[in-house]
Image (tube, rainbow, N blue to C red):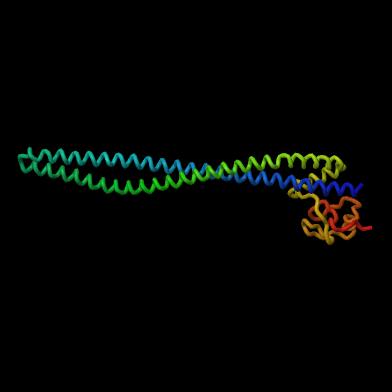
Length: 241
């Protein structure tokens, strides 16, 4: 019975490896989709922040242009009163008011020039961020399509492999199934490995000679003394007589 048990365990590991491979394809496609989704959300947040800064700066620019217009209007009104000036004192007051308005215009125009420069730079940054969002949207749509295709492609394969897995499990003794599942859980899915040249091919630990003979002859289920995986003989070696 042991040779049949070992053969079923070998087939079981092959099926499990194929299931893992198919599910790994799904997981890789899903992780890529999730990575792009996260990147898109970050890019959208950055675009919103840049748009808000640009909008706030544009409001300041409009306010400053209004201030400049008002100061220029004030200068024009004051200059218009020059003909009404009768005394030196009144003249000096008009000149001072014109000077104040002119200084305000000069100062605000300098600030406005910097604001326009900053706004131009921010506008370019907004365009850059928007282009990045659009590129990520395209990439995400493509990755979502790839994920859907991978899920569709692997669905039947995984179902078939799980049916085969259940058939092999049903042919094994309960204690062997429990041992196999425990090892598979603890050893990253790899529960059955070849013993080659008196060593475990998973961890390279030497196997006692008598145990190795039992593996090659398939006389019982032998586990690696180090990693505890179930050992089977190399495929190219015929069972010893």
